Image 1 (cartoon, one colour):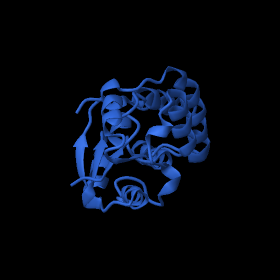
Image 2 (image 1 turned 60 degrees about the horizontal axis):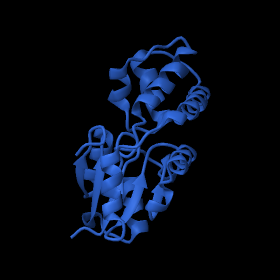
Image 3 (image 1 turned 180 degrees about the vertical axis):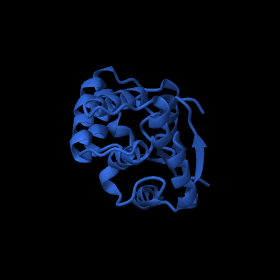
Image 4 (image 1 turned 30 degrees about the vertical axis):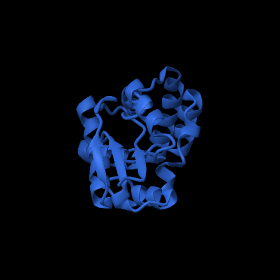
Length: 187
């Protein structure tokens, strides 16, 4: 029996992945580095600085990760004016309220999560909200999912995760949680 439902944010609740890609692409282009959508989505779901480290490795280039990450966040926050939810997932969340404890778990920063949830008036729907800063190891490590379960007062086997990325699904599996793959807001 499930007691808790854990949602990823980017690509599950909000249609932010095109904005994420655009912000990484622009920030990297200022360093004369190009990134394709395929390359970005290969690493999507990882924490931003780890994603940039992977890009640095596959491109065999060097750049200041913090500088590019900060630039990416500045660009991303400007693009958030166009952020939209996936309506079917919002309907599902509304059905779950009061029946299950709900968590939002994302590799995005708490600042970006707060901006998005405040803009879309979604913050109050979740009992627990965790971001990149809340886990020492990002997805595919299960750490952040296990922390969410603990804060929700549920065992991992009592949680179900809604995820879109391969890293997130691997993290859910490693945490001992069931998962449902979401593709652009669709189950």
